[in-house]
Image 1: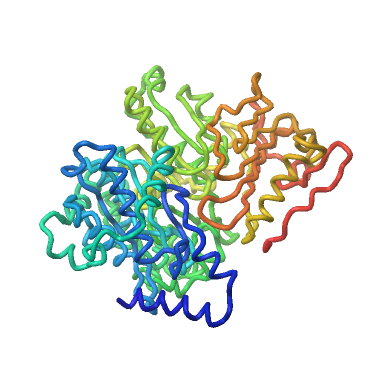
Image 2: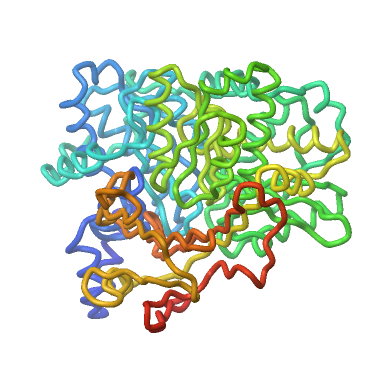
Length: 585
C-alpha cells in the first residue's frame, strides 16, 4: 500500500542521511499508553502512528479483552474516526479505523464501525448504548496536523484507566507480529457480516437524549440572538447544526473556510481553539459582518468548545475554560433547581472538576448544598468517577476541565463540544431575554460566590531530560527532598506532589488523589489564597502551569491586579531564584 511504501521510503531516507538519533528514536522505543491510548506523529517507526503500530495495538487490545470478558465475541467493539490524514502517505484516520476493524473481524469479533467521521463523544456514547466491550476512536483531537492517535474506551463508556492501560500495553508487546494477511485488509470491513454501521442509530439516539438538556425550547426558537460556529476543519459542522435544531434554534452561521474537513487545517496556525482570539480570527470577522453576538468553536474532533461574546464597545471577550465552566455550572444547577425545588434534593447531585481547574464549582457546592469532587487531570478520571457515582444512585449534572472540556449531564462519559455548544446557546438566549450578556452573568456569579481569578499557560519542551531536571530541581530545591518554601515573596503553606504521593496538608503526608507516576504534577498552596500547579501534559510536549486566586468566603470584590501575581517565580527561604524555562526548550 501507499502507506507502507511511504514509511519504508522514510526510513531509507533517514538511513541515507545518516540520521542515527532520529532512527533510534523511531525504531528503538515504542509508544506507551498515555491519556487513554496512543498519540504521536504519523510516520515510520514503532513510536509513530502507522498501519503496523495500529495493527499491533489492536491485537493487544483484542488479547486483553478476550481475557477480561467471557462474552467478548458477542459484545464487540465500537470504532470511530475523525478527518485527519496525510495525502503523501495515505495514512488517514479512516484507513486506520478500517485496519482496527480488520484485526478484530479476522478473529470473528463484531465491530460497530462508523461509516463516516464522527465527534469523539459518539464513540463512548455508542459503547454504552450498544453494550460493547470497548471502543476505539482514531483521533489526535486538537494536536498538530502531523499527529494522530488511538483512543480507547472501556465498557462503561469512560476512557481506559489503570490497570487496563498497562495490561493492554503488555499484551501488545507479547505479540508484535501481525497475525495474518487479513489484518492488513481494509476491504474486510465491506465484506464481513460481523461489521455493522451504527451511525444512523447512534446519531438519532444521541440527538433524542440531547433534548433532555434543553429547558426553554420555545424561548430559543424566538430568540433574536445570532451565533457563529467554526468546526476548525474537523467533524463538528453537521453535528452542531443538528444539535441547534434539537434546541429549537436555527442552525448557527458556519465559518465557510472552516466548516468542511481539511486535514491540513489550512486556515489556522494550529487547530486548537483553546489558543483564543489568535485562531478565532475568521470566526470573529464573520460574526462582526453578520452581527452575531456569540461565537462557538469546536476543536477538530468536536469534544471541546471555545466561546466568545461581543463585548459592548470593546471588542470580543474570549472566555477561558474556567470562566465558561462558572457559567455552565451556574446554568446546569439553575435549570436543575427549577425542576427540583426542595433544598434536600441537592444532596443527590454532584459536580466534578479536575484538580488543576478552577475551584468555582466548590464555591457553588458550599453555598447551594450539593456535592463537589476533584479528580486527577484528564477526563478519564471524571468519566470513571461519574460511572462509580451512578452506581450509588447519585447524579453528576456538570463536569469540566479547564482546557475548554465540558460535560453537561451524564449521558456521555467524556467531554462533549456538540452538546455543550447547544447548552451555551440556550443559556445565552435565556440571559439575553433577561437583558444580560454572558459577561454580565459571569460577574453576577462572582458577586454571589466570590471572585475566582485564574491564569493558565504552558511552555513547550521537546527534551524529556530537561523536563526531568526541572522537576527534580523543584523536589530538591533547598537540599534533598526539600520543596520551595516561598513563591513571589509569599509563604507556601502546602505542597502536594501526586507523582510521589506526597501532600504536606495531610496528617500522614500522603496525597488523597491517586499517585500518578507516569507524569509530573506538583501543587503549591500559598498563604494569600493562590493555588498554583505545575504539570506535564499527557498528550503534548508541554509543561503546563495553572494558577488561581480564590476569594475568601464573604469577599465579593474583584482582587486588584497589583495585589496578586498569578504566575510568580518560586524561591527558597534564601530567595534563590528559580529560572523558568523559555517558551521553547
